[in-house]
Length: 405
Image 1: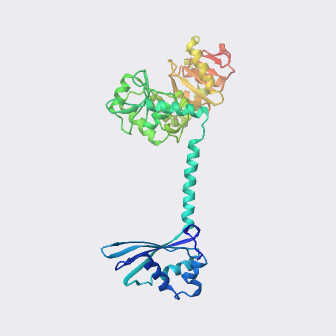
Image 2 (image 1 turned 180 degrees about the vertical axis):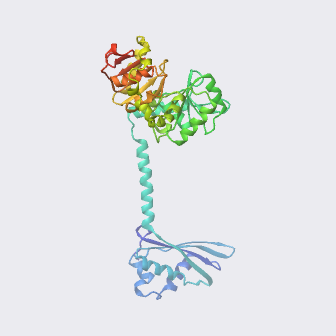
């Protein structure tokens, strides 16, 4: 008799069986063949279908408990969906097996191809995962992985609030405050170890106490949440500098270059208030007319010539000039060479008109007569530009170019 196995079948009929008595497997198989014989016509006769290989070997698994027998019947089929469904329905007409009453209920018709396809997909995922995991990384990836693992191990808990922090928070004079643990990890990955996280939107007592002891820079996300956290910190802690991640980005996801750019562009808290006040200043028409109304203002005439640049000033100005090349931006510095703010060159003159504490300006632009007049009125001592069109005897401001530094 030709038979097919479940491996070559397309469908498997799964049916439960409950018998009011004790019977054996051969009794069940005999009832299946005997009680369906002649029921479905010669083309769907189970014995003939099994001989031709279109129905596989009928599997019966039963067990007897307390004088009753129950189990499962599995019939593999290579017929089409409709024919297989007819065979399955025919099983349910069997009411007796041997001398006992019986009830057969088809639970499901399983599409073997779907099961095989699911297995193939699942196995392929496992094989691909193993292949990726076992692939040989290059030397840089190995170095990065080792360094990251070491730096992650360096993270610790600091203060009574047990805040996530880098290993250098206690040792150094400066500390960087970020929002969460992931931010600390990202900065540790880039070698910045004096970082501590707030671990929430409220300001912990540990941060407040730390701000009294160290120079504190707040580094928040470039979103609305970062603005709110910054506002809360400024109200209760002694913050020395503030900076933000690029708009729409979080500190935990930015690159090494973006981290260092943000830290170099940090400003004092007063600059935040200035930025918020710039819009009404821009709209005031009288400010725009001031250069024409006072071409020879006494304050310009009385301004003392700026002293020569110190070596520290030259080094600072040269470094900042190199950073600004191609950016069309400007740094405003106080007398201690701290950055008060960074503004576009297009807004530089307008910004200067609202300030009187700018010691030096380093910008990616040209120092012409109009700009120098505005700088003189604001009390600026040094201007470093990419190009200069003003002679030194025409202004008390010390004007230099990047090439002269």
